[in-house]
Image 1 (cartoon, rainbow, N blue to C red):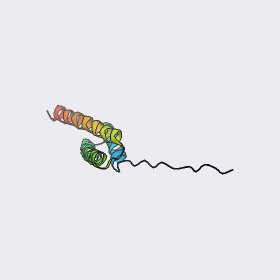
Image 2 (image 1 turned 90 degrees about the horizontal axis):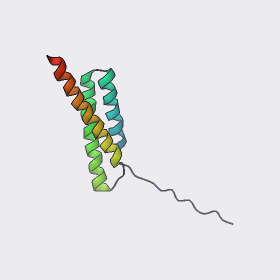
Image 3 (image 1 turned 60 degrees about the vertical axis):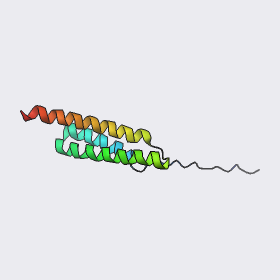
Image 4 (image 1 turned 90 degrees about the vertical axis):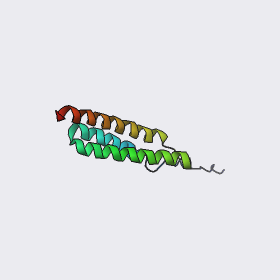
Length: 91
């Protein structure tokens, strides 16, 4: 009796999809607990990584669309909140 061969299904995810989400969440943590400037830098980086990941999803057929979009949404929210915070404390 032979055992059935098990085929591993490899799923390819866009290389920058998960880092986009991680850096986006990190920017939110920095906005609350750290310097606002670092949060802004991290948020812009996460948006750039998410954009690259979305381009990879579209052109190469990778997975990870949700991670990339999630990172961009979190980072966009951080950018908006940081801008509001800076404007409100400037006066």
